[in-house]
Amino acid sequence: MRVAIMHETVFEKIITTCAVAYFAVDAKGEVVLWNKQAEKLFGWQADDILGEHFYSFLIPGNIQEIERHASFFADPLPERF
Image (cartoon, rainbow, N blue to C red; front, top):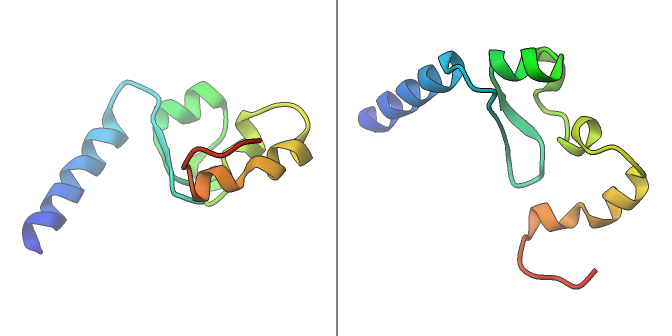
């Protein structure tokens, strides 16, 4: 358990201090990680983005059509659209 916490801490430090924009989403497509470089690149602060669904700000276009296909992120097995 202690080693896992140490690895998580090291990973978090690497991601938050790296010079590359990095963000991560969970299985529901919600943003769970957003570093300073992502803030600079996209123009949104982490506090404003964390917990939001990534398509709400990264994918332009018809949001209703996107929502129709959003179940893909919950179960990404091949599916016919």
